[in-house]
Amino acid sequence: MLEKKLYVNALYDFYHSLLTEKQRKYMDLYYVDDFSLGEIAENFGVSRQAVYDNLKRTETLLDDFESHLHLYEKYTERSSRLEELRALLDKEPFSKQQAIEMIEGIENLD
Amino acid sequence: MLEKKLYVNALYDFYHSLLTEKQRKYMDLYYVDDFSLGEIAENFGVSRQAVYDNLKRTETLLDDFESHLHLYEKYTERSSRLEELRALLDKEPFSKQQAIEMIEGIENLD
Image (tube, each protein chain N blue to C red):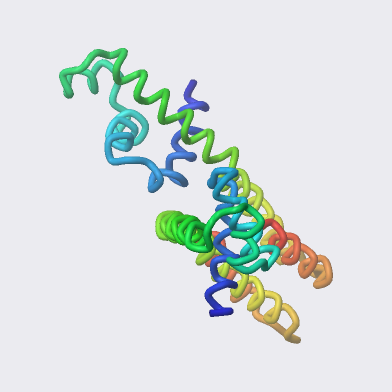
């Protein structure tokens, strides 16, 4: 559950600008500020179910954006390769040819 | 004009998966296959103006995606920094500290 929350949070980081203000409102409260469904419902004078449904729809939308653009997936892959490159440079001596191939690999991720 | 076409083409590369099939149809013909407005209009039995309007709307949408997600802008910036990193590694000797700072800079672009 916590893992899922972190994943949705990551997708939200990448795609929040494509959501409407209304969609962002509940997402911010639930995923960023960590309020409970009950607290959000009470605050807006709506049912817990209404908050839940709204969040579910937005999550589906975020999954949809990711399935089309893969920004989070690419980010994860690029970060791990940049880390590998950095680790390679810390070796003494290191293969310059290998470093250049790693840079090319990162370029080709886009 | 050619420059603008290249720019729209680049945006289309990044965001085509967010467009509908109908929107992609004219874009593919005009921007990828390089048909003229007149040729596309004739092929689909519609007016040249209809093709133009359709393309214009899609271009506005692509600009809108870019203004929200900046994928093309980030790609350009990342590419140029990766090139700089590669050029740095080709120097003899080169500063490892500088290379690591460049890697960190690239990581922070996301």
